[in-house]
Image (cartoon, rainbow, N blue to C red; front, side, top):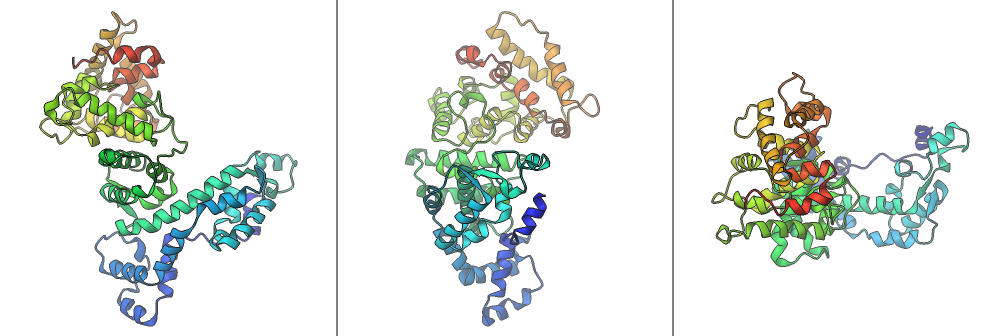
Length: 449
């Protein structure tokens, strides 16, 4: 039924970046076409893997300097406030007939809305009632009876506009369909001043590092230092990072969770920066860097054994780490169930041996350090130490029955058990619902004192 509805409403073929570039190639004037003739056999010029392809460079140079420039200009001029102006005349619930009326009004503002507000777009928006189930019960006659919330339509359109604008702008920072972490950081550095996000000049480098790391954490969970461009612009992360206006995503845990609902807020950044500064300031001679001993002054401080492997795995500055390296740790604690957190912790646990797996003895050694921290808070622990270790293995379920590979963690989606049980006593106690009463005590008894 849904497929028939879409087909009947003549959905235009999605206009991707690749098809746009193909269209631009057809619009080249004869002189331009002649110049690019030797490279006509390369049909996917906009998506070549070779970063240094001469054909790619010439093609993009010609298109951007000529016809493609008009598309760039048009995308940049799209005004999202026009959407709100039109939508304010409609009720909070919208059906397909009203949706078409809205499209017609927006097309008068800019013809590109005719492409954006397709039947596909409407069909994919969240519905107020489960329309397909109602159809099966014969309570409605067609998918056209589906209702959506006006706010969902507004949010989706805003996001589409931002995504297109970001995609066009990012061409200046990459020549493939991926972007490196360094290139993304350069892009954010150049663009963020146009957003009124409250960042002060003295914290600018730290903010740029913070949001770049956060985006990479979600979109490059295995640390390849590259992110897919389409994934980047289609997510809300870039818009949230630049505006520091969060969009709802995974629940946040760790030291930021008591005051923030997202990593992408001004308050979250300021708190993260303050926590790092306060811990590093314990040793003024470290010049704003964090020494091993001072990690004990962090909120959700790491265990002694984890710190040893953490610092061993990094390039240190006079034996200390910088804010960028701390943010990786903070993100893992903030989203312990994520693939990125599991990958990050797994590599640190295996940093000294590079075996590619973690044995039961390794797990015991790391948990011993957590258990020692537990005994500093409670005179005795009623649960045997081995029971905690058994719980880790019971949930990760190693395929060979004894050694934990990262593939086991991915297969069983059990990153949380690696992160919670082997990194910080505060994270483990948060999982056990003791965070509200235990956290103030934990901050007073760091092992580094």
